[in-house]
Image (tube, rainbow, N blue to C red; front, side, top):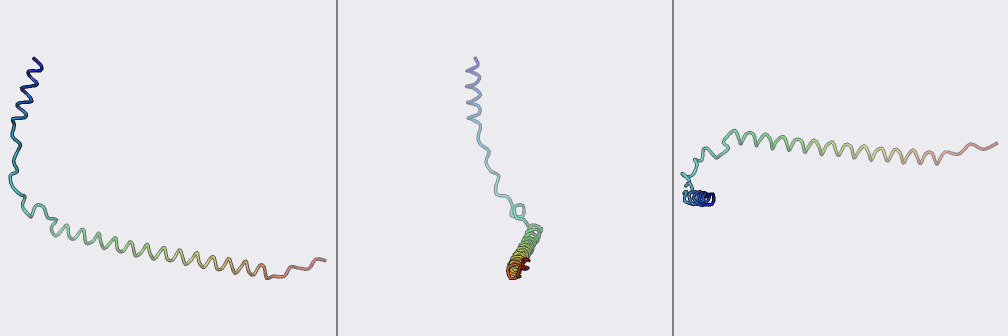
Length: 88
């Protein structure tokens, strides 16, 4: 009895036709339009400005590190050049 009901249900589901598409959507409903262009444009400008700022900051940090290394090297060189006080 249960097997009979399952068989009828599977036949009924298999006999149901698949829905056919009603047609292609209109071009106005699938394009981003002017608002999409404006948002994308401002997003691209923001990304470019952020990248330029990041490059500037990285360059500044690198220059500061180079100057600190030079000052440390000069200070270490001065410490070596100073004569030691004579022992009495």
